[in-house]
Length: 210
Image (tube, rainbow, N blue to C red; front, top):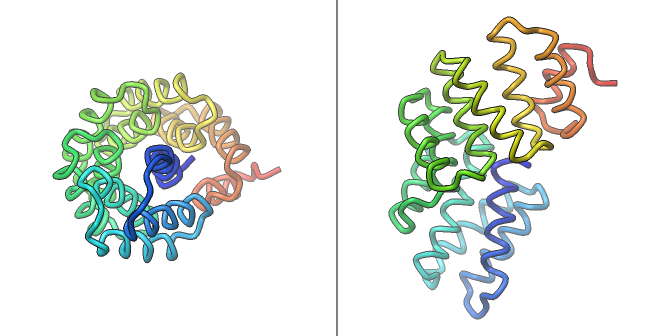
């Protein structure tokens, strides 16, 4: 699952019992579009949910957290950072908002801030596999491949079929000059998520798409 899909699934579960407002109706539609892989529609609906002005602070935080994830995955790291910072002002310590904001920091090249957010996320939600994966990615970008590998291993202990964790672990193994193991991880990532653009591009470059 991607950060978007994880955040959307968690938010859908949290909102299952909620009814009765324009903001909630728009948020539910946004989450569905997000889950169905329609990022542009999801962004528009998240904006409408936020603009409605009738969401409770905790639910408004869900909207910002999930829009943050969509913005990050569609290339607007600065917008993602702003939205997750808003979410954390409403819901301090929320692990999903922290890991999404950490991913935005990493995309902007601020790896120290990324590591701080990811360490905070895993401290608050030790079983959140995607946060361990993102901490792995941030540590690798910071040049600490050995520590990165431990976090990817933890992510896969928690969620063995998480495609991004296999992909990130492959990148770490490449950095550690362990190409055969890296190739195996990239192949597994492709088997799990053949339509993920980054995963597919790497698999095609390595000739492992069959």
